Length: 442
Image 1 (cartoon, rainbow, N blue to C red):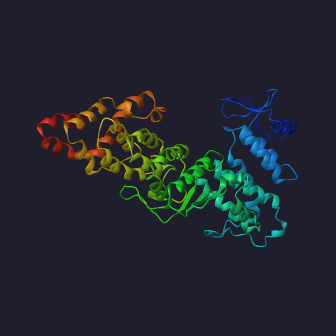
Image 2: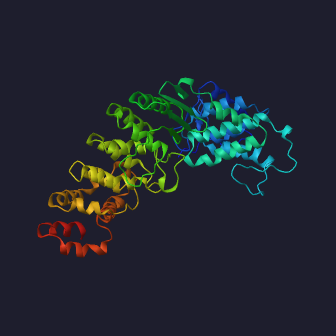
């Protein structure tokens, strides 16, 4: 850990001014050592948060200057920049001054303190609150959408129409051709501030879906939020052969598009662009929470063995503690492809993609033959090879010894259920399978 850096603002104003000048001139760099202070060409180090606090408290406050400064320092300091510094500024300069925390807040309401004079509110402050909200939407964790919406309600409550402008036009920082597309078949509109992609199909055809996927893919290659909502409207509402999968617009979009084999490369490109751990489709909640790319992966994963690696990558990327929608995919996958040498690693990745995958009768039936029991036994004997590298990255030596056996219990449970059933299963198994069941289950 690098400890040779300054934190205190008082008494260091002259040095901080040098940092501000250097940031504007792009002559600072970020230290490689935690907590990643910024470094001047002459070697001095200063903690990023202190630099930001100092700049934001300079008078007079001009929103555009503050935005340009924060954008520069954010791009320069990918590791050290913390958004809580900006959130603290919002709390001290807007929230505490104008809003009543005692009053009960309902959805869509931010109660002002009695006697608040809207004419006295600094519009520069409100513009900066909008900027902080946009930053949280684009670069913060997916749950920051709660804070984003609260900030926008605050700005509206203080009499600004800036939020309405953002709803209409987004941040205006993305080229218009990336956020708007329309032809005789389809219309697509994206808003980077509210993280929405709205799609309407007027004529069902391959060309329409080609335009849609090209539009979304180009959008995800630029500075668009990683968690977002896809709103899809079309007369055709195909569904994937996955029992219990929520029927929603984004589901219909990829089920419709997957019927055109020529578009599969575009759908795969989308899946790889969208697949980000701890990111979500904003309009899917609770048991239907889904990482962006979910329906694209499910669609392709049930089409052809060539997408097995894509499915594995997805299952290794999902947040196993907060997402369970993939549990619906696994039986559909086994029903389509069965258990083979090629499909077994995918099946294992599906089971390990969540903390406790529900057992399905179909799984036990699929393994009830000598060939597949042998495949599973080979898997058990080499199980660490079936566990993703990312899962093993943080393992200690002790974990490396103990975790494979622990995770194996998940595999067995997901195929045959609770272990109190195993003795009877072994006992009643056919003679040619008994030794396999015994080694797998004991």
